[in-house]
Length: 258
Image (cartoon, rainbow, N blue to C red; front, side, top):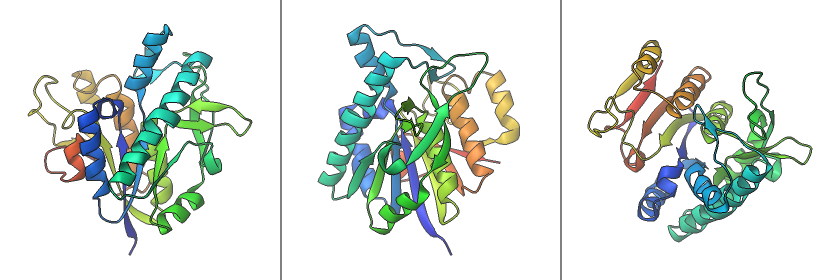
């Protein structure tokens, strides 16, 4: 029987709220067994960009990344956000290590190749050093991985954190029974975005396209759900989407199923 592994991806909405941020990390520290955290920080990066006079450009929930944008992403994701997470987890007696994709050759990627949109310095994942992750997990060290990868030639690349969580979950599902939880500032996928009680408890793949047509799933939620199905089809056992309470209970959130 495989050991259980919980992988959490947390978004900028929670990271940007100090009180919520600490509650989330306290709950994360209490997860029994092996655990791994993937984080973005897009809202925080965007706020710094605005203060620095750097244009914020997004298309379909994906960030357009030029060299100035990448500099801010590195400072916020790998620096401010990542090290704050690790230090607070240590406060809660959760031994953690902060990593980018360049550390220990953890995640290599290539610049996204699309004819329609030039995303700039954005990477699509090529490989994951799961052996290194396994070594950390065996030592009971919780990896905290930010949304930066590298191309093997000295170039850091901005990479979607949802995609990183999905790809790592798939890779580790060879050796672990993986549950993936996407944690953001809503209790789940909402039928009415203004009503936090209107949670769509289950989303099946054959319902997904209709939910997009009805505009229930839109913007950044579209690639998130796509990553969910990709992970489920490639070995991940369970996937949930919800707010910080999802760590303690999966009763009031959205479950993604095939």
